[in-house]
Image (cartoon, rainbow, N blue to C red):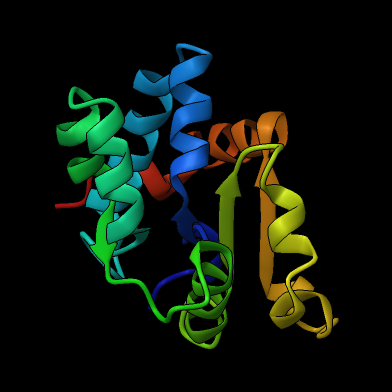
Length: 157
């Protein structure tokens, strides 16, 4: 049986986080970490890390070079509703939070974190804060650095 402590949270990333990585010229390192987690997940191989289709399209439109790195690191999924990016991601995180590993992390940038934290679907339910974490900037990078040294990025045979 899997040790839940070796399984990283499900990860949802928006395009703002990818642009943050690009602007700071650190996308290679962190997309590599995300690719390893995505590929090596024991529970959800190739579906551990999620990115909305709309975010993927916007990233591709701005930076075509990132297309292949993004495909290797994330499983694209359709927009959940017409309420916009932030609400769709929150609703997706809520729907994933009751499945193993019972924790979801949303990665964004500093300009958008408030849109998640203040979203009524998140802010009005204190219990969600125990299973859905939202990180930006250095906190997001620290999270990825922690999982890069965990068993989450090891190859499984």
